[in-house]
Image (spheres, rainbow, N blue to C red):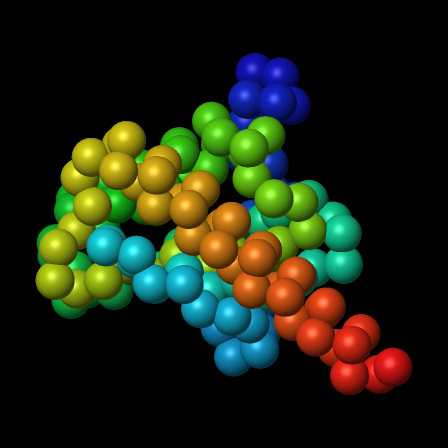
Length: 129
């Protein structure tokens, strides 16, 4: 497997403090199946973290949701905005089960978060003047 096809550790949020940093200090973009949190990471490649609680379903359901999100991120990493840390929190009501829908939600949420953060940066620059 080449670098472009994999999901290496450097592209994952792995520690609890990384997840909490994004969730507490970042922006939020709700979608149909997820609440997506995002935070700038200083221009590094976009990283992904996934949280699926037991409320979503049994282990096989939770694992499928995580697999779908990971695969959508892996296949569409080139279309993602650069420089974000993203945390996907699965909503309890309806677990995601359609790959195309997960891809649309992933890309849409990432672009919305990028836009929110860009608007924040523009606002900060205007206030400083």
